[in-house]
Length: 446
Image 1 (cartoon, rainbow, N blue to C red):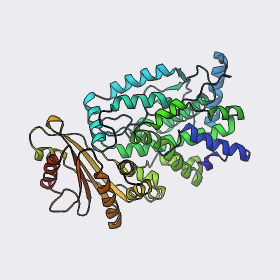
Image 2: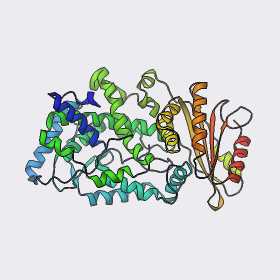
Image 3: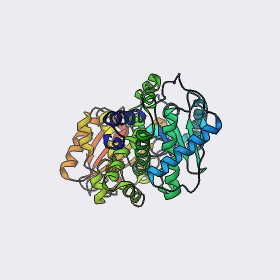
Image 4: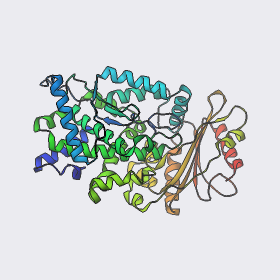
């Protein structure tokens, strides 16, 4: 992250800016914007994620006239730095934390029918990524209400900033800069067309969101190094310990998927910027990243390495399982979420990362049966035979930690579904259902 902060003058200022970027992104390890059919959750596009800052006792209210001038000044500075034209000026709307929570709850209910939430929750629990009895909806809303500092709505063209202190301090100014970048992106590239919430394309959506958020985060970092003083930089470093503790206590799949577009997106976009400035970043909107693999490995993005198509016939699997079984929409986990799955199920972090790094493609389906029974099929493809063997070993270890029954099998052209040599992870609510699922997979054919 340090290269993104080098525009500031002076060694101490650069180090402070790098640290502030970490704080603003809730530094640590670690799409669809809502759970829906995908077992992931991210903020409403297009948001600024930040732990709630500790209240600044020295902050004072800003008169409305001065506030309008402040917004206009930040917008001019963002336009000058980012180099994108403003086709329409936007005045931020300030929300209290209570107003943000109410909006999150309303939007969640609007966008996520209960049955879709139940599918996502069941998938996460079956994969060992969400504790039994946990409410995905409650966790998701709590996560966003405590961590989102602002967001831009491309449908209404409105920009919202959360002020937990009731004043406009350093955190709010940085959030305005971040969200104004989204407004400029929308006016130049059309954020709605980037499609960061496509059903069944969770990995691709997360990768595309990483470009958008990485762009805004890089701009935000450059802006704060130029335009905030020492006192304001110090204010940003003060993090509410309760908000941080809440984030740390969230299931890793929710926490890290929330952070990925900001943290890894910053690294990805900074690499583009270093290779050709903002013009190189602009060109990426004409060739969007296709997977989190491309974001994690920019050389694969540069080479145009596309994900392998992995086919699953969910309807055939449900039919083979018998009466009462229903297929739910398929999705793709991708390299990033596969590494989280492995790590959260007993594979050491570095080994999990290495085992997921040879990812070629995958497809996941959650099957619901009678009396709470379930089955999960994760079909994966890998770049090389060595990558296949490495993932098979790691997945076998992880499968042994899943809450139900699970096994790892090798695909073949005359048996288990999938291309010859592909690895399938099968999980079910119990051993009997696992056996039936394995038979169904074999019966479904390649």
